[in-house]
Image (cartoon, rainbow, N blue to C red; front, side, top):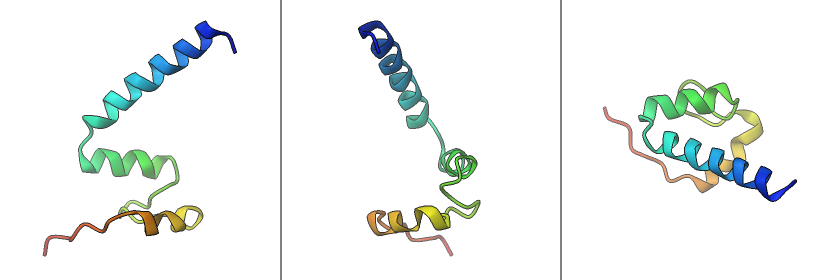
Length: 62
């Protein structure tokens, strides 16, 4: 990978990170759902279940 290719990749990552920072909770869950990481209810899928140990639970509104 050339320095130019690396810079293009870094610029893309920066722009995607900015997009993610502006997402609502619902948009973030849908994005992770489309990637197969979360279920529609916001739980980790079987392949990513170990990540639950790293996440601080957020109390649900009742």
